[in-house]
Length: 446
Image 1 (tube, rainbow, N blue to C red):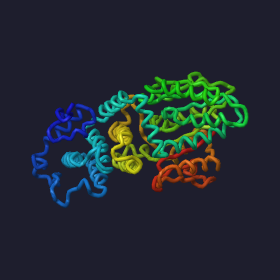
Image 2 (image 1 turned 90 degrees about the vertical axis):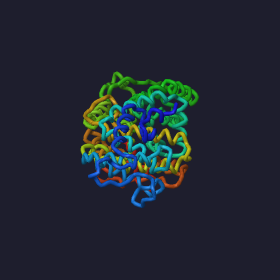
Image 3 (image 1 turned 135 degrees about the vertical axis):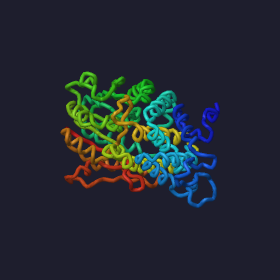
Image 4 (image 1 turned 60 degrees about the horizontal axis):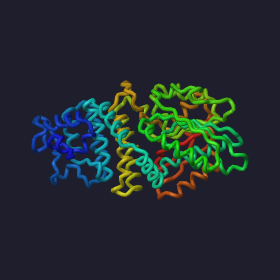
């Protein structure tokens, strides 16, 4: 079906985001420009958005034009400058493409969020994006995407290796292990841990893995993944039990009974990308709840960005969001082939987060995931306030992470802050891309 048949004249299909209201709204913006792409209000000075030889206009082949235009548009939205908003949205729409270079992709996905912010349609667009993702998220697609991403980038495997090492050391010598996994990583972390348990010198322990499903797109494939995990555990000779918990409205509904916690079990809680999904004002309560489960260790891995303290200042939040996703998109560009379907899927996943952060009112509780990331120093402060103490990664774990990074292309590095400092930033280790920390991994004990 040709989507252009349902698109107002002059509106590019990639802007739509699968939302009919999105099409209608941009059509209304379209009407405010004449055939020469100039606003009909002749009293306002503007810049032409046509692709002529005018040297003052941005070029799709220029260097880093997208961040400049996107920042101008964000400031115009903050200032409620409707004329400038219309002009810049039109200009960005002419230049953006989800199939172009890094600048064009950034422009495409941030344009969608800026349009939703300007038209107060963020929640509607976000729900549509999530619905489309759920319908297309089958097991084979998810498996192929995850394996390819892990092959070309340590973005997820970094946290897996660090967390597994800390968990194995904390639970060494125990005969009954219970890992509570709150991560939505489709159990890709656990095969290597099962292998390590199978090769232990002492008696192979019994492992209970409780997976708490917090993302709807994950729940649809977990049944088949669970069956494969059980088969792999039998192959490894590890006594294994898998429990799936789904249907929660929020993590605060978890209890010891729901998790099946028993007195004779050594508990580990694994949180990879989970805490950022909790509403900002509920995070302290959730962390205290985890502390009440008396885990031997709790591992926390989060992406290094601050969308939380800046949430009341749209321009500052936009700047932080743009900085983070610029690095992420550049990393994807250098890691994947230009025509990679996996790369396009990962970028589309980002579009949901960008819309959620920039265009959805925090006070509007619509049941969707929170996507407000925080920096490692902010998480450290929250964890310490809840009664946790940082556990430094051992030299063996750090060496394992370094060995992992050697498998990938140049540009990745490990940042290990000096231990024993009093400031919160000393907790944990960081995965850096071109010297910019992007992922934080840490381990904690009550």
